Image (cartoon, rainbow, N blue to C red; front, side, top):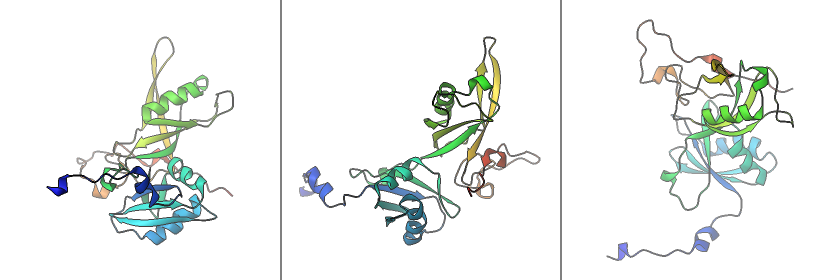
Length: 230
């Protein structure tokens, strides 16, 4: 049973073959087959505006990105969400020890506006607590002293796209513990389903069907499209 003997590969050998440039793997959530060249041009312009990116097709709308500028990888993994046309691109770190099938394309970073918060609760502690409730807290927009009093609290969160979007958070406020409902608004939110609240498909193809006269639980009020910067 030679096939079971196992071939020991030194870590150096596995690493030496690749390039020294930083890499990541992306998945485009699209029905149609995506063209690697078009993807490299569209995302390369944003991630590595000077030198661009390499983009290798791994099949099943999975792509290996190579960044020719180091800052590009950080941008690809930490900013976003990234779209190719109307389709979401989920980016994960490159792991040379994993099979493509083992990579999990489930999380995207997104800026969220928490609205209807009492002024005194617009601070980093509250921002972190809310962020952790929604997903994984990444950062918060605020002043140096940790306050962020304004029309809303803006936090960046890594969310799981396999879970329905949260429409708001309930905060327990004050000594008497009154419950406050704080609606959430997502910036640059990709297409999502108004019926089940999942990102990546729309109502037309949703398996959940509404009863006659039943209203969808989600709506376009969940996403904010910021005006283009001049």
